[in-house]
Amino acid sequence: MEDKIRAIESFLDELDMEQLVPLWNEYCEAVNYMDDMVENMDAFDELMTGMEPHEIAQKVCYGDFNYAHNWFSFNGYGNLVSFGRAEDENSPIYTLEMAEYIVKHDVDFGCDEVRELLDGTEEEEE
Image (tube, rainbow, N blue to C red; front, top):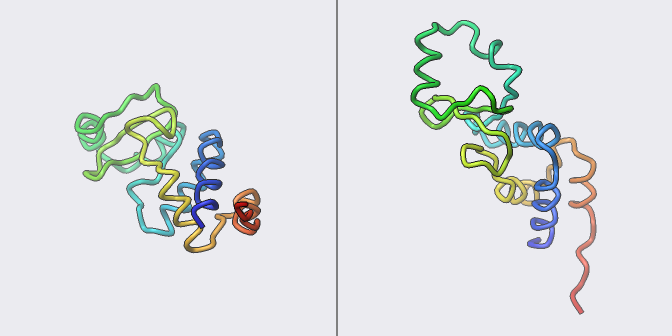
């Protein structure tokens, strides 16, 4: 089981953000971590639709937000945080946590490569 977790974590760590984010967001939906869902900066205007300008300013001011980053999410206080890579400080993405969930619940989130790793046999140590 630990070998599968490590293999899946390694696979997830190698994905680029465009491939990783949809898997991460499906994981967030599965575990009800809606604040940890990650959005592309291109969706910023659409996601802020309906908010008053002062509400958006507050979310930026009290968060850690840089519009030049490619990705953003909300922190535990509902404020905006941005980042460029999964391993950046503001990123809510934890591939180990996700890999553990994938193995424990035998879910692949629609990713064929994850399914192959889940279904693969663990090699016996000699």
